[in-house]
Length: 552
Image (tube, rainbow, N blue to C red; front, top):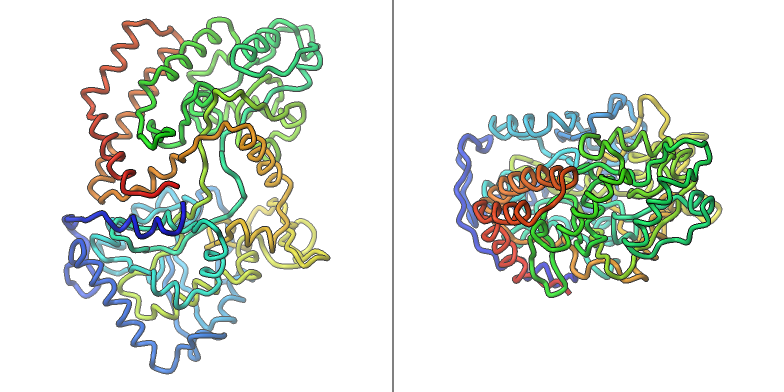
């Protein structure tokens, strides 16, 4: 989406009530709607003025002449085992560089929402919230637009974050447009690990089995079905047993689930919603389309003939992954092959499969996710903005994400002979002395291409995307625009509840369709069920929002 989209997103007007129990540390109640934005802007301006006390340096390092402390609340993955932040070499370097000490409050992702709500309710806000990579979340509509607890950062970013703005402005399409709130302001510094990819959906077929049975690569669903039948009956693994799994998948389990199969029937299903944007910019409810029924009937046929894993309905993501590691699979979907924990399994015998032009895969946009927020009680806003930009200094950023430069074999990163960064970290450390993907990271595609040697698994993914793009099988208007639609906080809350109900209904019926089949009566009952769930209003809400946006 072009940079002019920012202006178009400001069209949404709001009248939103404040949630009870949240306030500022001064004990005053935050204003609502536009007034909240004015209050937050005023707080930022006040802090900027206060920076003229001689301690703050607008350029160069250190950022402050006399040390200050920022309270930083950071979300990390539940699975992460990290050393004390103050002992991390990258964190020590950051403090020496900037003169700013970070008092880190480290929160596991599963505890983030509870801890954040407690902090906001108490009025004792951290100065900075770091919630990157989906490990935590901060609702900019509620806590920015409505309550003014987090500050609008547009002008502050442009004034104090040259690393960030230079990378942003070097892209033909602004990757930060996804961060614009319904009032046209930006309340977060973005997080982005660019990969130059355009879809997350890829199909793979066992080439060794095709060769063993002298089969041609199928070109469409009908030919694929015949190949799956041959995989079941032809003993392609040569062990004399009928133990092959022609098609491996589960139901609603991410990369290996139904959402990856629906594109074969012309439905670009995304990971979160059961709606999509068609080629005419119309929002469509996916589950009642003819292609959805066609997919259900196909999967039921495969289930009846034993061509799909018989545990398709019950198995979870980990079970499917275990079977992919074993490699006794003919066809499957995945994010990619390499560095997916099944190098000795399906990655060793499978290749990318490209469906015919009737397919329509979800188009992935490389846009920012929220990364860092600054709260309204922060007394050092300009210094904080410069500190966030220091996190993005190239060497500092890679050291916090991957470990130290020149740390040794299997650790950190190095510069190659061309001056480009090569990661040497193999991720095997039991306890990491770096923040990993939990740190703030902003690396759009052009910046990465100039400074970073993409690892093999990333270039593999890029090559797959290029092939699918050349085949013309990726949707025209990305479903990601639905997440960028200018909805009010109340609309977002309502849609979240609606989407939960819709998802439960769809997934429950998918299980029945796959195992027992689809009849005219069961299909008509399924379709009519959504009439009573307010789906039409839900779709229209998104259509109205999409109509205000420039998707070209």
